[in-house]
Length: 150
Length: 200
Image 1: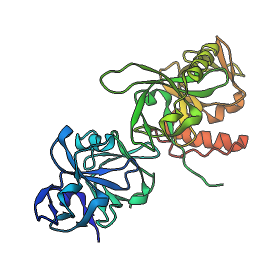
Image 2: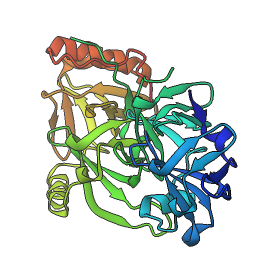
Image 3: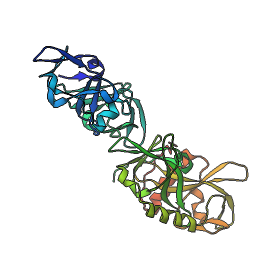
């Protein structure tokens, strides 16, 4: 099973206990390694952004993302999440740069494991890199191992 | 020995490239200038500028030993801890000041032939960047490439090249890549240079 970031954006986020929509998938927060999704941005903007920790998801379904209750939604936005919510660090559209210092266009999509949040592949224009070849995701680039493209 | 291909590039082409961390994907600076010791024909490193709107000179210097790779689009470092402290920067500047400025120096062979005037330094790119040659401009305004060797003698007036090196002189950077490989092989230094000698 795998999912893509581009196809998951806009998917409703539903609280299982009340059946309420608590938001929708607005953005993905990845750690600095660029290999793991840590949070979802589900509602609000900038300072009032509302986040859900990946570990609090009860299921990342094809039609909806489930959380146990509304209580799992937090307004505490840490520095890394803030960078990504504000678009200082982008996922789709990120410049792809290899460890030898050569650019390879921009990131078109990320494929991830909906169970674990682990990144399976970074998808560029006509080529892709396996998740374990990703070295970092920062404000300048997604850095990948040189000669690791498939 | 594995033959990892190394590309050649003009030192001047590195100026303005971003310096990017492999562990963070952040641009921590951009190359302001190349610090080169003309006396020992050695690349010391780069001075850096800040990036973005509030640009200015960083006191940090990037020493060549801390560079993970030089590519066509960026200079890569493992982490921002690889930017040297200001003390090291001062030492690097002092080194730069002590050496004779090699740019603009006449290049003459030991048999008395003037090859041209030094117009630039050629570096090998990739994981172990180093100075490998000089670009000269001859009387006719054409480019001439001469490999760097320990036998080069530099004064404030001239750079003297052993006449035995004449066979390795090239007129194009592409051909020079192969020439440097050949020259190094004879010296037993074993540095492999991309035979296409691509400028990156």
